[in-house]
Image (cartoon, rainbow, N blue to C red; front, top):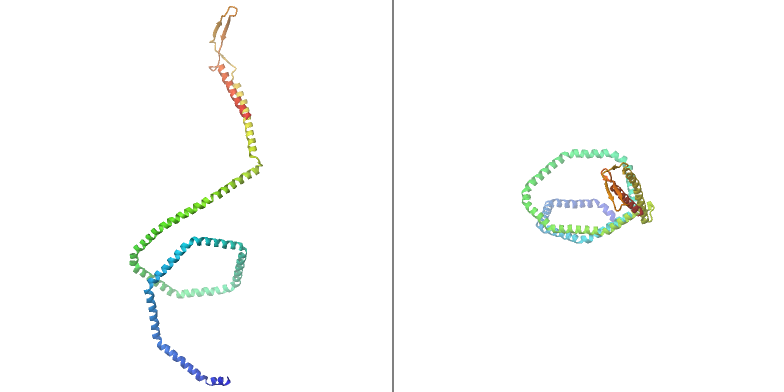
Length: 332
């Protein structure tokens, strides 16, 4: 090993010189062959681009078939995917709610750590902030002419491209509109079916909630009745309302009695004390025999042109009617 090391050290200049010659030879060969290599690479790129362009319709059709197949599969799997997704989301929410204390604790730790880190780094950040802002402003100011020139060129190229493409766009517009109309027409039936299913689903949901709503209303009304009965101390509503009816009957009877006393006073006041005597009397004789011969004299009494006997009869009839009504109500 000592001999080998000594030989290498003794011949090191020759070895380095040979290595340098090899490297330089390789570099010279690479530089000399660079135009051919570049030309070959360019031909390779052009060949790849031409191959892609030639096969582009087939590639696009294959991509569309892949997209349509995926969309169809997803659409067919949605009735099974959506309940599974809902169940998964429900499970996730339940787990999150169950572990909310730990999540909030961890979030608080993260916020606390961020706040402490920002507070600790704030002096250095404030110290470096003017330099950062100044560098950004200087870069924008220095690059503003180039940015403005590029923006103007971009706008001009876009405008020129749009103007050049207007004939093709106008020529394709009827086909685009026709395709949209055909697509909407094909989807109309599906849209109608989807709307019908949504309405039916809503109606089924509402119908399934009717019994629940009835129970809630019954419980609500029952709770109100129980609360009112409890607040008023009512245990037997029938007895309470029976007492109310009895009190009503007694009140009505007392009302009629009070009213009758007023009626009696009005009747006493209506009976006149002054009478007009109608002297157009009728005199008749009864001569059944000489011993029993008698003389009958009839003198009619009137009040304001009405015979007194008729007025008394009307007053008596009114008195009897009120009395009967009073007795009937008070007795009930």
